[in-house]
Image 1: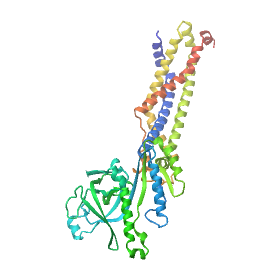
Image 2: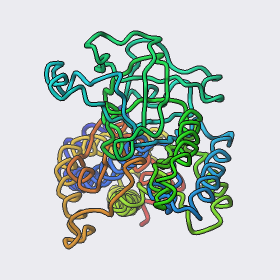
Image 3: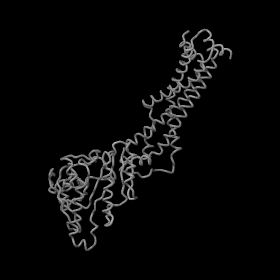
Image 4: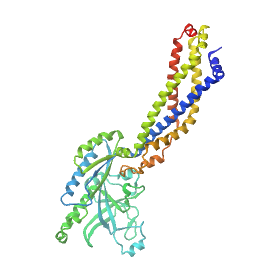
Length: 469
């Protein structure tokens, strides 16, 4: 009788032994598949979080540039800009989105037709539209590259305009001239700053493009009331405003010179070329930030704040997978060894009649492989249910019920507002193709290792020794 026929008859006739091995393997496979699903799902979630946060960082200044103090503003402004420029020049940086801004300006040349009709605008005696001068250090604003705004007409800035601070601007597309006519590319727009109904400064700028905001910006910023210009242009306007203010003796005599607006610098978004550069960049930034007025933060800080539960789950699931794998090998090795020893006389008879050892080994491999792989694959169904229950139990164990929300995170580094609650609400276990491949590899590894020890015993055995036991 051929070995594979003997193998099949052994499986079908020895129902109790087959059933015990099948049931044991099924239970082990269910636990192995459930812990593996838990581990791979955690790794996938970790990768998704890090991918969404990206290799981004920022440098905060504790100095409030919106409150200019005579003896400190210039010092901290120069220091902060120097630090940002040095960081932006780092080879690991893809871009450092540094924005200057200047408030308190208005324009009598335009009005916003998205907020009122032209008739209402006339009824208000064509009051000037308040504007924020919003700066950029790139010829194409980073907001365009990040799909948060788009230029709908005209062009962006040239490198020369950025570097020299040319008097050019991008204007929101919904703005019209104060005579209700469309603004043309190349039109001149007047900006002015007024104090106590007196115009302190008038500034002419040229419209080179129009834009619209298409996605939410960090910190609920709205570009609809901004004109975008080079950072250097904002510096020129600020310098002109300071000089113009000094010419008003009333302002000087009343001691309110420092009531005029000064340039604000928003915390920049520094995006690195690769997340692998983040740690070295952090060290470089730390060397520059030698005093307590600045703090460096990155996407890894946000990850640490919101993903502690995932890290704990990952550690627990890794431990469970390792435990399940090792215990599977040990248990199945013992059971397989026991079954082979129970059939030692059968093996001895095969050897005594001249059956080759390799055929006997193939017979036992076929029996064990068939039963184990069948039970391992069927255990996937039970493993899915077990993994869902296991993940819920682990979450209940790891989550502090007294903590309802995570620590507030930086909107610049977490624009999608990924929170711990978001992670938990979207947590799911996936049984996809990658899981099936890893599971099949583990199953075959368990089979190979658990069958090796008993088969070694079989290879070294002699018919006389076996029959004499």
